[in-house]
Length: 110
Length: 135
Length: 102
Image (cartoon, rainbow over all chains, first blue to last red; front, side, top):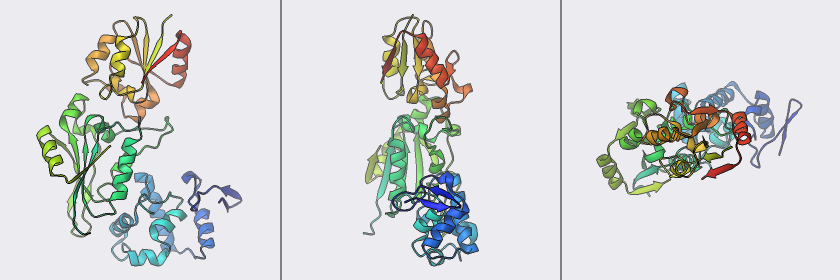
């Protein structure tokens, strides 16, 4: 189902992931979060930005386990744990945060 | 459920001409969710998968070379490369990417888990593996 | 006029290049594409065969496929001509027919 972001129509797949990662802009995350009735805070943006950088470097969306480890390495253990990440993204940091970041669904997520 | 097995993924195909290399990589990434002892073996044209400097900007194909560098994060402990296959293709380990590994709990680090092995070692490593997946 | 022979398999995996060389007439052009471009690499076990063929045949390799496989100019056997897609089309035009070795 396509989404409307700042006057543009962007294609998504059947699970709501952006069809073309290059079409991403911060507005995408805002529109998706609004649909989920979630207010995006700086803490959310920190993870979304991190995922964008991860994809840029490795060309994949990390599995949640790997994301948790990588966040811990970069931002410290108080953020690199599932309690913190699920607190921010209740539908799952792998799936929900990757979707907001315009990434494909993480490899290995079912 | 908790018994850990030694898995080996055997890669013998060049990266872009067929889908095998990418499929193998995806299965490794998916399989990493199960705590097993995983190693990858590259031989024959499979050694081309690790050659650094790939540029697919003019080919309309996804460049998945960077994805190999994340394998350490996915718990892969060894990327073995058959020496004779490298030599037959005019390559050395200097032509290959490096993949780092780190245990976040113990902070144990290995700078590069890519390792060239000779035929005797290949035989030994495959014999030691309980499951070998071929691509 | 002569024929253009295309080879899209690695010479280390299949004998397509060997067959193309063996069964093409003198004066033919052989274009390496997809995994066939590995045949253009210096210092391999296939180098002697390729060099031998260049005595009476012209050898070409497609640039975009070389790039994807990280085969830089300094690793390509001397005498092999690198062509882009436009060059591919020129070769097709310049020859009587195209024969593919798969």
